[in-house]
Every structure is written in C-alpha cells, then in structure tokens.
Length: 187
Image (cartoon, rainbow, N blue to C red; front, side):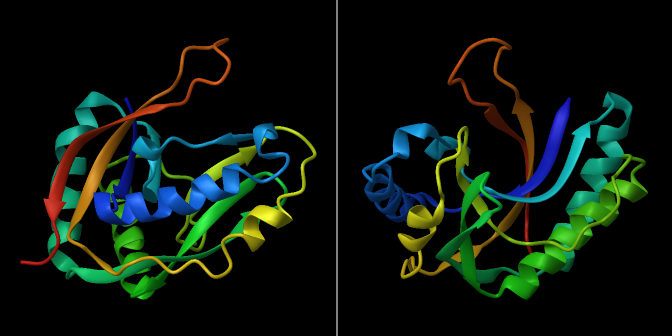
C-alpha cells in the first residue's frame, strides 16, 4: 500500500485557510490550476511509497516510538510560496524546528523498519494548495498568500496515511487519503 507520515491540521485552521484559498481561486487564470481538495490538506513528514504488508507492524512500532519522543508543539499557517512554476504552497510559522524533528524521526523510523527510502532531503514544511497544468504565472497566487497568518494550533499526533491514487484516465480526479493509524505526541 502507498503510505506517508503526516500531520493533519485541525478543522478550524483548515476552514481559515480555505477562505483564503477561495479568494485565490477568484483570480484571473485560476481555472488553469489544479486546486487540491480541502480533505487532502496535510503536512507530509515522510513519503514511503509502496510499503509491503509484512513491514507494517515494524513501521507502526517505529512511528509510535517517534511520536512519543516528540512533544506537542504549536504551528500556524503563514505565508506561501511556489516550487518553480509547478506548485503553490502555504507555509508554517511557529515551532517549525519541532516539525522538522518529527519529520526526521518519521523517516528514520521507516528506514529502521525496512522501508526503502530515497535519499534524505532537508525537510521544507509546506501544504500544497495548487498545481500548475499550464504556463500560468504563479506569482499572483503567492502574492495573495504573503500576508496570510492563520490561527495558532497544536500538533498533537503523528498520522500514517494511505494514499489511494485516482483512476487513470479520469481528468480532474484527486487522490483520496485514509488515516491508517495515529499516535499522540509526547509521553
């Protein structure tokens, strides 16, 4: 099954972000972007790809340990940016160092559980809100996020999420995500 570790923001923070995203979707050219669905908004900590069934018990054990080693911490959505002219994202403010540490632990735990991991890249916390399907400039969308400051919320758990890719050949369909397990942070 296709899995990743994630932090799922609370509904109130998601609703606040959704209001800002709606204003971005009203900008000229917004129809050329593929907007991610609210139900899929999350912070990916570590992407595992296809994980064999027999590795799941070890992965669960390692992620539970990782979660217990990290205390709850505060974040908020803040600002935004882009990756090239392909992706528009919302960033975070608050204890991003704690989020990075949790991401590192989620990746290390998977490696110890036998999950093949690509080369480790520095973690850049972000939540993808749109992907570019054309040559549309993403600058106005990033500019529309510059002053965005969401409410503070507490990261309380680490989630293991299964990704169900959309059926091939169905335009506009997005992946569906299912929480497989979650562990509270701290002791």
